[in-house]
Amino acid sequence: MYYIILMNKYVIITARCNSTRLKNKILKKITNKHLAIDIIINRALLIKRPICLATSNHKSDDKLVKYVKKKYNIEIFRGHKENKVSRWLSCINKFKIDYFAVIDGDDLAFDYTIYKKNLDKLKKKRNVILKFPNDIIPGSFTYIFSSASIKLINKRTIKFKKVDVIEYFLKYIKNIEEVKVSKNLLNKKIRLTLDYPKDLKFFRSLFQKLDILESTQKIVKYLNENDNIRNINYFLEELWRNNQLKEVNLHEKKNI
Image (cartoon, rainbow, N blue to C red; front, side, top):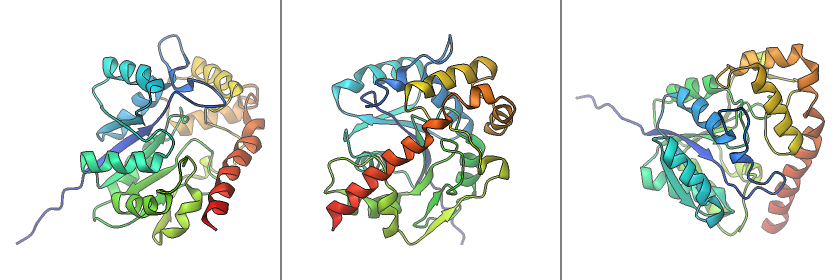
């Protein structure tokens, strides 16, 4: 007798209003018709999996929840304000999720084809993390997690009040695989993440020219041919990476 194992695969959008460098960035207007969250959700719908917005239970996110509830038929989960691993774990427990793709609220041009392809490939339950290649364009892909891997990471992060950057804790997971992506997404001086005012100017300029659902491949091709837009925000990449590294170093010091 054969049994078919049905796995519950989700897309979890991680977003909050109380961002430090660009306040309320998830609700910033990008086009005449779309806020940042609209673009994220509409691109996520192309992955063809259930979607959950995982935000905080703080009152600062009430307006985000109200907006999404009014416009979209997706799940909403509210959890820990500062520790997003704890928030993810509570979310996957509530919805009994086996695997989930993480879409950061910063990543307005993420590659939905990479997420869909790799989620679809997962056929057996196993403790695995699928991560980005180190030289990928930031904002195009982050992670796909198994529920088991998040439970392991949570054991390491539970004592931390704030966890936004998780790289330090990945060393505790044995089975981490890099996703395969086209060369077009590697080693490019392009930044596809919304973190600073210049990033906001970049995305507004980009989506004046291209549809919000344009493939990441075509977005990259367009940016390679249009330095005037590409150069609006790429100079911020080193600053952004240094800020990420600061949090990783803090985690390391607290764990000594």
